Image 1 (spheres, rainbow, N blue to C red):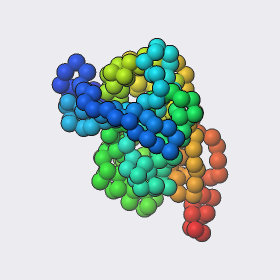
Image 2: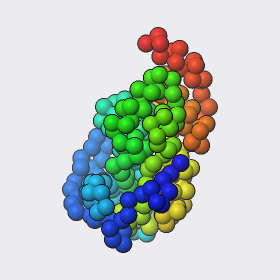
Image 3: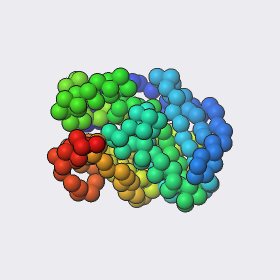
Image 4: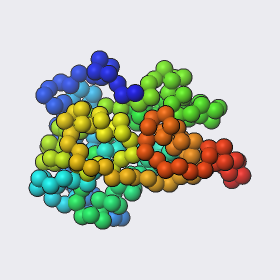
Length: 224
């Protein structure tokens, strides 16, 4: 579940975030503009990558991506996060216009060290939701309140959102973000993340295609 209002830190002013820096960011797919934001309540540094004219009033192809150091930077096969990040940037580059918000809320909001602890519990048989619960956390502690002011700073009025997560759509809409359509972002399924993806579909409601059973995937993983 997403955090209730009394579980979230209070924002220090009307929108809680400030755009403080920007630069060009060349990538293998396009040269994006990288925007740096600071969250007043926590001091966290959040990012946005934009490509093309995103402030012209037309809906923008978008991804709201929460930090996953293990997947985004260390190529972990336990999740689909890194592959989704790359796929989203590729799609934006192919369209020539879009935005990716990169929010610093690692491990669905529980932090990096607790995510490592959760991974250990998963090695012992827990699924991704059960592992969070065993550590005393809810299913999903991510907070999307900063997205609307970030988008406002960038002049973006509405989104065509790349996501498989209905909770994310509802949470963003609750914060006043206009989503005109959803774009599926289904990426790699492998023997190491199959149970994770099955759990996201079965317990968190993600829209993911049916695939081989987790038992088959685990057996395949044991042969690698």
